[in-house]
Image (cartoon, rainbow, N blue to C red; front, side, top):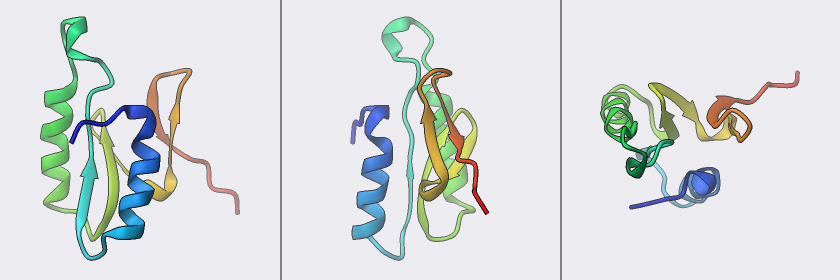
Length: 88
């Protein structure tokens, strides 16, 4: 399934609400292939590795990192996904 990275969070939340007892890892490319050197294959390899070890849930894998869908945000200024700061 092809997704825009801007909609990953909405898609992850929808999947978490609908599909239970599965491990779901969303990934893609932050650098489109049309720019010459895409990160898509690296991200796919990382996601395939992560899915082998994660507990049930919905995750986003990008740039060799894995994030729980409940605790991630896209930093549009830096163009990366990052953990949200938890307020205690």
